[in-house]
Amino acid sequence: MTDRVLSEAEVEKMETAIWDQAKAAIDAGDAEGAKVLIDRAVAQWAGLKDYSINWITSLLTFVADELGEEAVERALRKTGDEFVRPRRTTGSEWGTVPAAQRAKVIARAMLANMGEVEVSEDDEKIILSFRCGSGGKLIDDGRYTGDHPYRTLRERAGRTFSRDELPVYCAHCSVNNEIQPIEWGSTPTSIELPPERRGERCIHHVYKDVSAIPDEAFVRIGKRPPV
Image 1 (cartoon, rainbow, N blue to C red):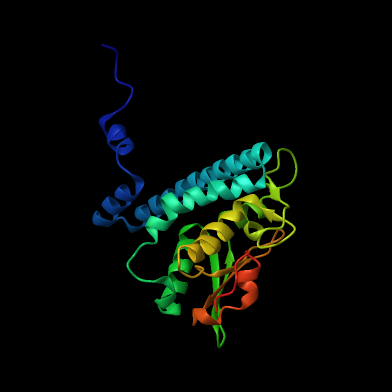
Image 2 (cartoon, one colour; image 1 turned 90 degrees about the horizontal axis):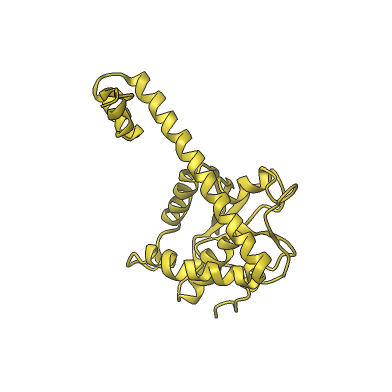
């Protein structure tokens, strides 16, 4: 038998998630060590998150290049029907949930996605201004320009918010967060205004009364405003 190259301590560390190591450090009274481990866990998660969003965007780019932009919408719709919709089936109609709670849910998700958020409010809506940790980060990182750029959708349609251009990753916002919820008999998760260039923030409008959502918010995604 050859000599072992891993010590028992190394094996135990390899088999223990960093957050569990951080908990053990806290239990042992090592607060500084726990902070180091938490920062390391966050850095690892950020790396995996960036890998995943690039993987997704590369696949969507391939779909658009091979099958056309409408196929991107079909792919996103399949994800919406089979994955997004079940996650949002909570027993409470989204439009009846208090606006403050709806805004907190969205902000919490964006912060978990390594984004930044600023919150303001006017008489009719809560305004969430994000430095997006996924689609916005791809724009800020210049992934839609240069060598091997990701696809920018250029066919004006609901999936592009009727814009002349929309980064392909951001199409899930129109399809899964606005178009499909309406088709499922609900209301848009929020009214989204994705960034158009580097450095811009993604704006979400969370209306206190969903019946006050402006008609143009529906028209831009190809839907008839509710009566």
